[in-house]
Image 1 (cartoon, rainbow, N blue to C red):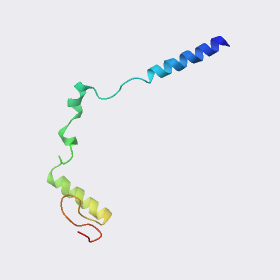
Image 2: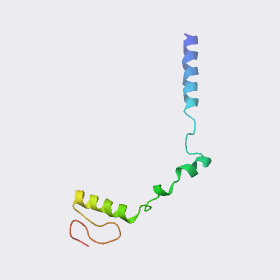
Image 3: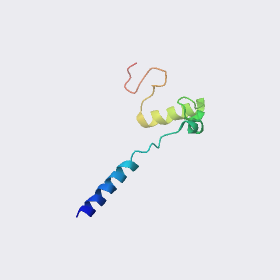
Image 4: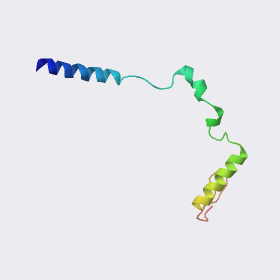
Length: 75
């Protein structure tokens, strides 16, 4: 019984130690992950216009990108 309990404690400690790993982005990996395409507002004008068209076609509203107006008619 003591041997089984020691085995369970050893497995629990081993499991807890493996959960303490840092798998975040390392400093030398940031240049590969920081692409200009991923920054907000990096899309060209045509992409923004297409996104706006799709949004107001689906939501029946316009505005929110720097110009007044909305689907309810209030400015």
